[in-house]
Image (cartoon, rainbow, N blue to C red; front, side, top):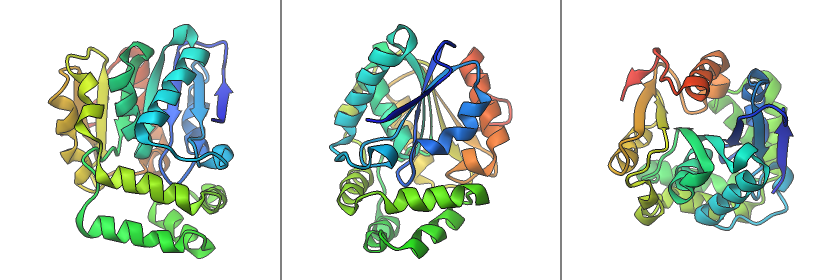
Length: 256
């Protein structure tokens, strides 16, 4: 798995896990704002510079990420930050390998899956996967800044359809309860977020975390949609720094 590394001599380590239609580049604004942290930014199997690799499963990829932390993070431990697909992986990674985790922050993690018309519409889009106009339309839907659109489109066109089908089907089915049961009794500090304006399936998934661990804090992010690290990077970076440096929950966040 390709891993971009910055600030190698600046502990603590932070592992950033990207969403399902992008690659590690989506975290450029956050990495730039954390010059005092050692940042590990993988391109997950099937995406970006790892596009030649096959998507296996959420659990297998989470285990690979634990190995990356063990081999490359300071002291074999890292803070984990994930959005969407990355938020799901971050949750499984924390459940299966708590000894590798300082803390976890996830946002947009639909742990209970995607169902109904939203699922049908999402899977139907796979027929358009190799169409440039589709990726341009997705960039607008995600409210990406103009300087990120070209990279988003080229990354999307580089994702093999079979990898997209395997990953999306698994994510849409939802995380198997057994894959989160390692959170029971966990003391790893865990912040789970949902944009106020993103689908309610995300906030509904909070119970999969809070029912297992008293170390989980849940909040909504006012006015934000799914990819709010691009929608309001200043706010995302403020929330992230508060959490990483002192375990504080930013005052601008709303009760879940």
